[in-house]
Figure: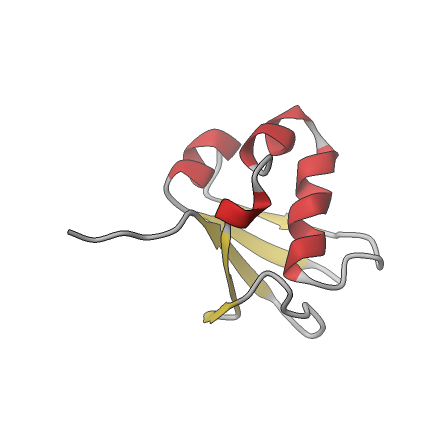
Length: 85
């Protein structure tokens, strides 16, 4: 399953890119699995995704919980919590 990933805010800055296309293994079934896979992929991902509870996820434009299934997904956005003020 090919996924187009988009990174925002400090996730983008720390990843060194705003987007990338990835082909995660079949064992990556949820957003949480994807975050864990990205963390295990390399040192950069390990630093960015060291605290997975801090990462918010949108799948195909819809805000989702990290336990959301990726089946049929095309686009996944990963970003920190948004605050206003």
